[in-house]
Amino acid sequence: MTIEDRWNHVVARVEAACRRVGRPASEVTIIAVSKTHPTRAILDAAAAGATDFGENYAQELADKMADVALAPDLAGVVRWHFIGRLQRNKAKLVAGKVALIHAVDTVELAEEIAKRAAGVLQPVLLAVNLAGEATKGGVTGESAAPIARALAAVPGIRLDGLMTMPPYSDDPESSRPQFEALYALRERLVDDLGLPLPVLSMGMSGDFEVAIECGATHVRVGTAIFGSRS
Image (cartoon, rainbow, N blue to C red; front, top):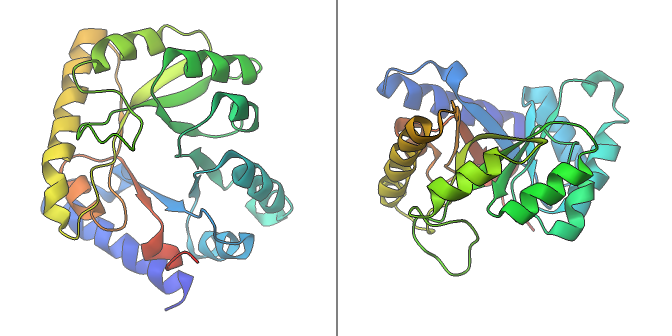
């Protein structure tokens, strides 16, 4: 299958998942996760209709942003997302340059992002590690409220919502409890903080349909669009 074929298939799956729960497909942003794939693959995905691209590594993001900027027909079309764990010393490569930073979990990182964004209001998400996996970043569900409040108070930062990444499993349904828990946590934080928090970033190639059924607004899909990474 070509990248165009895979993109169209993912779009059809998103639309079907939305129909099952009575949601308009326009509520869901598909982020094409292009990490380790060449710029040519990004251009092919953009030609197929993708507009949002996600990268996990700051330097790779910076390099690809520079490459894609040379394609005049994509000016103002491509939106970049940083979806990995951002090191504070790499914040200057990302802050103020992407539409959304998905995995902020400390006030210190938020402050560094704000400083490096040079006056640009930077939207971010609070990363929540609901399964308590030691190998992943993110705050616990119990600590999410005070940290979310602190992030929202950082000048230059706009807290737009939450993200999570459940443990890997071959069974998409195994992710449902974490997705439902993140949705419920967002609803509580909306009431507690008085903020809209419109974004729920959850679901990847193996489970994005379940995530959509649970309220995801952004799904991070790599392999299903670009194929396996080398």
